[in-house]
Length: 231
Image (cartoon, rainbow, N blue to C red; front, side, top):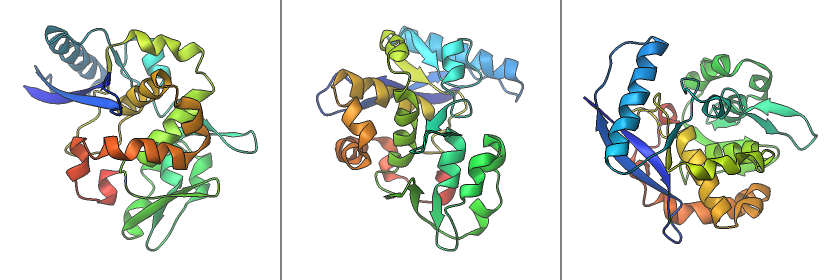
């Protein structure tokens, strides 16, 4: 058995995302077929608790929409009209005590950016930087979430489809090892859209952090240590 969170756009005023831990039968192995079995098990277990339908947001999703919303496939628009893979923008935007941001990571494959040795050898993570803007470490998911909703915003009409789902999952996400999660970011996008805050939060990172901060303090990850490995 294993336990993983599902991320539900919250109906509560001022609460963006509800995290629900769901236990399910776990199929061991790293093969994509095993991971897809785990998605099915997770979704079936969640459905028994009243959360259905769910969208798996990862390259392991059976739905094209879920695959397209993976951080490895999404691109973030730059101020000059260009774009950069979301994962590259996130990794390249990290600022450490002894280095960063590493803007050269913008032009490599997202998986290579994530494995760049400088991310482990540059000391303590102290913040993030993107397009002339500095981002704090708190709320912990603010920079990643903001990049994600910025990437989705250009497709917002098409992504009205997301409102059909009760929640979102990412089978690769383990809350004991990571903090940022594309499924949580997706749920955040839907909540902001429902609250008519999406446009102002996309165009102002300060406003987004203002909206996110009180909700973030209610989330399980708020108690995790601020280690660079967790990001």
